[in-house]
Length: 151
Image (cartoon, rainbow, N blue to C red):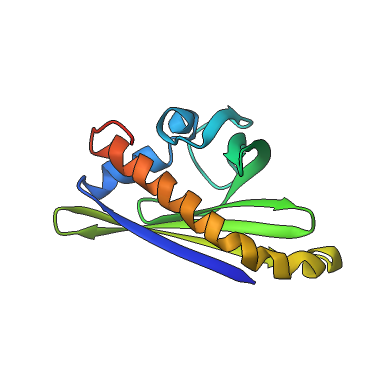
């Protein structure tokens, strides 16, 4: 298993930050690497919410189906996708902090099949790219939450 953790401080109340992060339909207008979102379920953000997300990865567009697999409203949620025998989990945690909200994103790669285990060593090589992507996503969401244009 490979993991990456990145965090940021956002100068907005926790409730505002959590609402912005869980606004899946608006993500493409806030996160520079996301090209398109197609929500597949109806209703509020909850366990089982699913969507197709097209984002730029290493200069190419890639579409994955994501779903909410864990939710502690106002505190944390996990989104998951499975592809090529590997499960990818990204958990976002939100904590009240002086002057705003601390956000921690944890990205875990877990092989689910023999094929996934065979390519797992290459996952470590990609973790730098994943870390940079997560940092950019958090910076874009921070800018949106604080009412600034994204860089």
